[in-house]
Amino acid sequence: MNHLSLITKREYLNKVKNKSFIIMTFLSPIIMVGIITLIAYLTQLNNDSVRTIAVLDESGLFVDDFTNNAETTYHILTDVELDVAKKLTQDAENYGLLYIPNGANVDEIAKKITFYSDDSPSLFVMDDIEDNIAEKARNIKLKNSGIDAAAVNAMRVRVTADLETFDGETTSKMGNGLKLIFGGAAGYLLFMFIIVYGNMIMRSVIEEKTSRIIEIIVSSVKPIKLLLGKIFGTSLAGLTQFVIWIIVGGVLMMVISSIFGIELSSMPSQDMIDQASNGSANKELAAIVSEIWRLPLLNLIIMFILFFAGGYLLYASVYAAIGAAVDNETDTQQFMLPIILPLMLAIYVGFFTVIENPHGVVSQVFSYIPFTSPVVMLMRIPFGVPIWQQLLSLFILFATFYLMVILAAKIYRVGILMYGKKPTYKELYKWLKY
Image (spheres, rainbow, N blue to C red):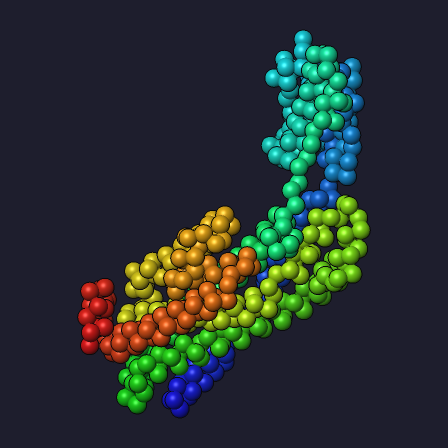
């Protein structure tokens, strides 16, 4: 295995000493943090702006129901014509004009309400206005029908069912959403890592093949060791880059947050849970914080590392085999679809099936299929998956990786010495028999 360690070291050093690798290692987190900061700054500017909306209520029914808030100020117009109100609104550069005409009844009035503005108004602003008018119109109709609107409103009952397992463990709907976020983030991270660094392995094989260095190397090294060395070396380089991204990105976020006065959220403590539980307004927050502490964090961390490594190595072996089979990156396009499809399927199953039924047949089946299990199983684990199922899925994953490396090595053995010809799927099948 001495050759394997040498190839792994050579591949790793070759990657980390590359100028473009070094530049992007430190430039990428700067760009990412810059984009996040810009979005936060623009969002803050947008939230700080106060919209002024002029209201011309000819019916007189709704004029007292528009109250100012932190985001919207209502300017009530009286004793003016509609054309004059439009001109006054435009001259004052207000956000818009809400026109409520007079009518025989609220149904007739509701059909003729118009909002005038220079541009299309925000959907959230219109929803607030329409809900406000609809609520008042409903109360007016109830009053005209001889029904006490206050009594009807008092009859409304808001049902919020508590969730609890048969073992007496309390949960929450927000907690289930939080579990999906944890699992989805892990699956998406693996997806992006495979796409980025899998392509790096493939390009590395193609570069050595086109430079004819490979002809010298294979004379003293077995193809399977050469393949594994390239996979391990590039994987370690990618892991190094990823760790640097986290460290640099974290430091930059702390620096920028202190400059802009943004408080970083820290890990919630038990005291925070108790304090949140004391106030009814913070009941939902307390439930979310409790759910975070209730997650199988140790299980999540360990299985994330194992599934992440297994899933990446499995796809990396496929990328390496493709790199050995072609002469340039253009020829790799015909082989990309079979790689991308399982990943896309895993993301689809994870977000649309696991959230509905994490322990259903579809979710369980795809959590055992090696090309989808790294994503689907990671999304299922926060919902509670027996350890034996996780270990079985891991065994299948790494066993498939071992078999895939053997198959990829056969393609690698023939493909690295093939030049000037684009292989077909039929030819690749023949190479597996050699």
